[in-house]
Image (cartoon, rainbow, N blue to C red):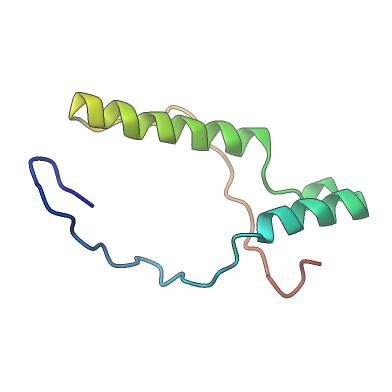
Amino acid sequence: MIRKNGSDWEPIPLSHGYKDPNRGLGVAAMAQALITGDSSAHRANGELAYHVLEAMHGFHDASEAGRHYVTKSSCEKPAALNPQTVL
């Protein structure tokens, strides 16, 4: 990260210790939902996508304006995904 008015990159420690390479699990969970017909297993819904998009725009707006951005949208946090049970 480079802080405001800073010039050098600073390492930021992981806050939750997550470092496993499980990025493909979301696609696997979606495929499982399609195969089984269980729509509740599909985690990436429109509400979550909109909230993520607003957060991304908020980062940009906050950076441009030099102030905090408070998101207006919210979404329900998906249940934890167990990598052992997905396909």
